[in-house]
Image (cartoon, rainbow, N blue to C red; front, side, top):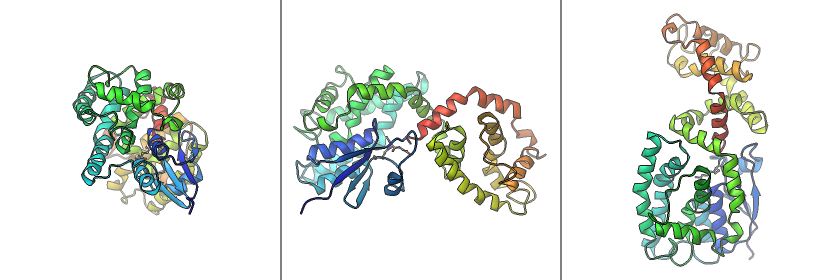
Amino acid sequence: MSSPPVKLIGFFGSPYAHRAEAALCLKGVPYELMLEDLFNAKSELLLKLNPIHKKVPVLIHGDRAISESLVIAEYVDETFEGPPLLPSDPYDRAMARFWAHFIENKFIKPFFMAHWLEEGEVRDGFVKEAKELLPLLEEQLKGKRFFGGDSPGYLDIAASMLAPTRMAVEEVTGVALINDDDYPALSQWAREYISNEALKPCMPDKDQLLAYFMKNKEMYKAGVKAMLQNFTKFCSKQFTKPFFMAHWLEEGEAREGFVKEAKELLPLLEAQLKGKRFFAGDSPGYLDIAACTLGPTRIAIEELTGVSLINDEEYPALSQWAREYISNETLKPCMPDRDQLLAYFTKNKERYTTAVKAMLLH
Ligand SMILES: N[C@@H](CCC(=O)N[C@@H](CS)C(=O)NCC(=O)O)C(=O)O
């Protein structure tokens, strides 16, 4: 029985999408690549097939959809004929998975923070951490061309962002932690990886990758900074993300999507205020504190960005609540000064707009 067609939803420049492509390439599985435009609007198909994370890559195999790059790699390995990606011995297989998990959960963050952050103490901390971890990976290559042995396998796929992506990022940022002197095996591995024959059809073009990171350099820098300031966490919340994305993003399809989402959620908050001055009743309480970004912060951001989702016509209760909140007597000593707040956001406008763009990739 012939296998149903294979399609892959990806994004140029995504090291995760590359992992899925690499698995397909190494197994010799023909596939159709469907590129997303993550900076504008995600396709209906992506949202439908990966409703939990809404991220690329997504593998489509007939009427099945599989998400998460490493899960895809295992699925591809188990489903299709061709050279095995994972070792046949259960212990070796467990070790390949262990090191893939290490790369994913322990290594990637300090390594790329060390590349994208601006010089300073915080960056030094990540450099130190990455340098403590790199020898562990170097050690895994001892006496081998690839992590998988003589040819690339599952762990090479998991580590692949240390090859084409890392090389382009190094060139753009001027930071190079992996070099021939300190990590000869990893350096040689990366060269072998990018020039491997079986991987050629899915290897991103070096110049295009360089151009991509060069173009989006500021965005990546702002993105890692936002990560440090917990802005990413703040923005990943159910309501705050679409609401503030709708304010800070430049006009376009992606922004419209967030406006739509925020407008679906705002009535839920409006309903919570029904017949009350504050969420907590007659005076502000816990939920008013939780919602306080919709008070002074939101008002300043509205003034600066010109976007105003909360207005008297559509959300009279929320609008009135915000006025009551900022002029509440008890809260006065800690209420940020309106002009200072506006000056702060005006000064940092570029930072915020670049950071939310970066958030589109998180
Ligand atoms: N853990 C995921 C990560 C995938 C991922 O972060 N994909 C990014 C592109 S590099 C994405 O789709 N971002 C869109 C978003 O976060 O909304 C995997 O291994 O597949």
